[in-house]
Image (cartoon, rainbow, N blue to C red; front, side, top):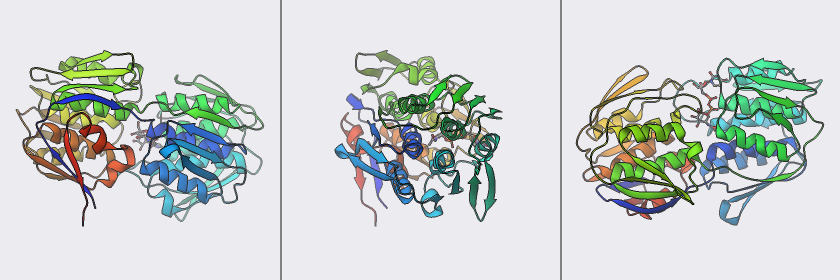
Length: 422
Ligand code: UD1
């Protein structure tokens, strides 16, 4: 397995292009299953998770190909001849479960393996099941698979989610586009990726209102048609690269960055003493002098501080002046990067859902390993300012969520190298 070696101590300067959002793209791709006509996505990120979704769609009978060096995804689902999403594909990525709602709506049946994905908590699917059941689906769990059917078709309903789950919102909204009558989804998730999905579904002819708020209303239609849609900017990739010059020192402009996507995150950067400037092309971030201040961070659903930036923020706080408390409210097991950062000299005390980080002057390079995507990138970030070399193993996690990571970081002056494993 490949690893990445980061040699710390280089100031960064230049620009980093931000890709289309992985999490938006993974919800947009299954939307192709809702229509017989082609769906084309532009600004798609080039990631292994996108390949996995392409493979899954193909296994169901859809045609899906990557064009223009992978940034355009051309899909067509005129001939869906399989309604079973197999464990061998689904286990690689939790977002595979996003084919459940569309298949149920289009075919009246779906069999979907329970997913795998990042090892960051139990991540059940009860909210997806409850929401689709409210729309008239009958769902049972057999042999690790969810068997869902809607023999009489789906019917609009009012459903309030117990927690604003991103994936459940996406599955329920997609299913409701072809249900008979009106669905009102209360306590819906408000993430930009959901707004992006709804914007695409509207181009396909869906009648939806309230996206970006806690109540989404969907009026079912008989059929959806084809569309072309650009994937929204990846706010997690954006936040990650914004932290690179903050941790390493220097100034980087993140091209395509938008403040409205990362407001809660920028508020915390501001409190820590980082300057973020909106430019005509994106967001410019710099840290030229002095040590950062400690800040407390609590993760929350959008518009709160994203759980997917918690590990990277921890990497920054490891060398801030003072003690920060990071509280993880979305996933119960998401501090697996903490012991690895401690191997690099960080002072972190994890107590249940809280991590107390007391800043040290400098981290030291070490061989480290991470067991999920965002944890892996937090170790790369930490390595940028550490003394000596940091070797990050199990790089396949990074390939799931960061396209051309080495190229993007070396482009602004970081010393980063990918080395093939045995
Ligand atoms: C999505 C993102 C992921 C991000 C997460 C939270 C994608 C592909 N992934 O994941 O990167 O970290 O949102 O912002 O978009 N839950 C239940 N029952 C359910 C569903 C969820 O209890 O039926 C719980 C989960 O265990 C977790 C929390 O709700 O603790 C958040 O999950 P959810 O919002 O559904 O995240 P995902 O859609 O899986």
